[in-house]
Image 1 (cartoon, rainbow over the protein chains, first blue to last red):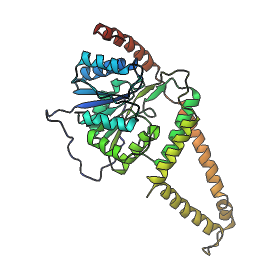
Image 2 (cartoon, chains in turn red, purple; image 1 turned 180 degrees about the vertical axis):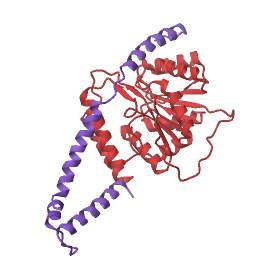
Image 3 (tube, rainbow over the protein chains, first blue to last red; image 1 turned 180 degrees about the horizontal axis):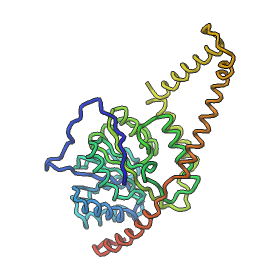
Image 4 (cartoon, rainbow over the protein chains, first blue to last red; image 1 turned 60 degrees about the vertical axis):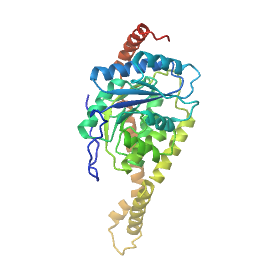
Length: 260
Length: 92
């Protein structure tokens, strides 16, 4: 699968990537969950399979926000099956938002790289070894999955959704010139210290939070690589993109345009 | 400088240049052929930009890659995962 170079030469000198004490890189996957009782075992199984087959040192941090459907019970079973060194449960009492979930997860993560992704199977863990390879190839601070370049793509979107998605991306590229093709994507690999720094600086929520992370990263001269990914939208027949989301996206976009 | 500021500066510079040239403020006597082109230029640029936007978005929508094979593989893996996890003692 072709992967794309989008780094600029950094203005500050590159330091060597940090490794943890064993001298080996470790990758912590942060999985914020809310009502993912059915998907969580599947995504964990796929993650374990991808990492094991590639011989990568990993852990999975599950941050459940008090799901009423029993997600936490399933997470506890997974911890028993795979071991508490590989599955870390760090739940919270109630739904508190993505940014704070990442902060909470990172406080317990022992890896030097953090992978963020959706827990609903729209992102496939098979791309993670490619993210890692891409990161090493360019010594990138961030590697972002993109649906809009190379053979990245989607499944399960109707025409209206595609038009909105491409239209929004077009406007975003014109206004923000972000140096990344997929700004609202949430399948990314970060150096741990980079993610910590960016979360401190970001103030938005939802789609716009993911956009702001990339925009702030560029402001701080972090380097960004991209890997084409496939995004499988399994929520058929349900429009996840209503008028409200579009309005709040536009508001967020204009705020970033005016303030960054 | 914010992106908004960059846009405003750019528009201000282009706008004032256009205004100066079309109103002869710089004392330049441009031939009337030039004036005829210059006067509607902003409107033309706006229309061209709109066409460009429509064509670009239309092209990207039409060529938006659909990953059907990804879905088939995922379905198979879901079944495999379910069976393996049940074997390891997971009760769904």
